[in-house]
Length: 396
Image 1 (cartoon, one colour):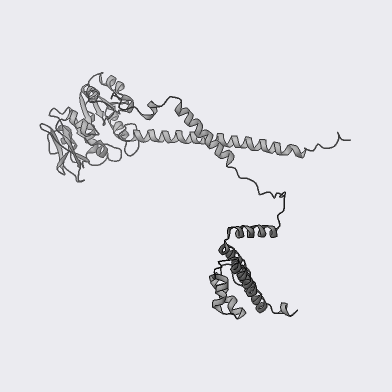
Image 2: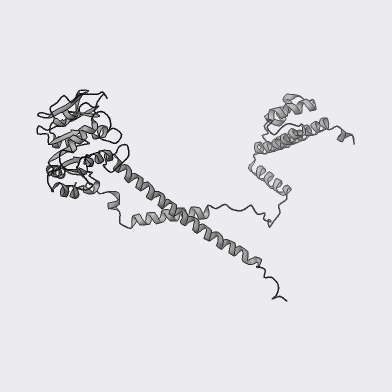
């Protein structure tokens, strides 16, 4: 009975199911690619944020961080407060006597930067730049980098005298009334105001984790930053900026819907590329509705040449066919030139080499009569070579 036998899937349903499977697989692949791109973007974003916090960051254990210095200060009883925005820094400084360690703050205006530094009892600029030197140490300027030699303080600043010798990194040129220590290379490795309230020193070359153990670097850092029981280490960011906006950006000029549309178009383009970029199957032979005989094709092409009166082109086609047959007959390779075939044919048929070259290469027909004569000469030459190469066929 038909109902008791095994059920066989109809052949007509298999292509539809296979097509459905391919579509599902394609969408799964697209979703997987998008998830992978999102994860990679998140990882790269996190790496970028860590790299930004690495230089002179008291919470960074990398070579250019200052976590070792922060731990040493805490062991000496100093409360190290890391402030990553201006409000937190001002709140920490309002609690009493405190030292402010600050890097360059290009996102802050002059007024905002001096407002933060004025709230501190002492200020140590650990990454001096031209603007911070101009604001807090008037008349001073950057002077390049020291030659890398060990130098003595050669000044009366107590923190430098107790620290002793070291190798300065960046050096500076002092202004009038500025205390200068560690003279080297035409500049000084440390500058301070007369009262010692503001100090500028290259923390990148002295206070980082990789350089803190050299010479008197650690002693100088503790003397400068541990003068009070509280140290506020301010790491200004772009979120603190109070600068007036300049020219509008391209994103501000475009409507808010432009960015989402661009993202959607990119996703659609990637999906279309994956969908249409799949590998097609093998070529399928297709029966032509009409079979055109080779003789009809040749006759039609000959009529076109005759109608265009292009005897030279027609002669070239005749010669190409004759050269190919002669090359195979003489056993020459497919890379043999027309001159080589002509010389070999002349030698085998014992004809004049110049005459054979004229037939196969040089002679140019100008009229239809010349073309017919050339065709006869080509046939005669081919018959002569046949007779010379295979004489047995002519004796039968």
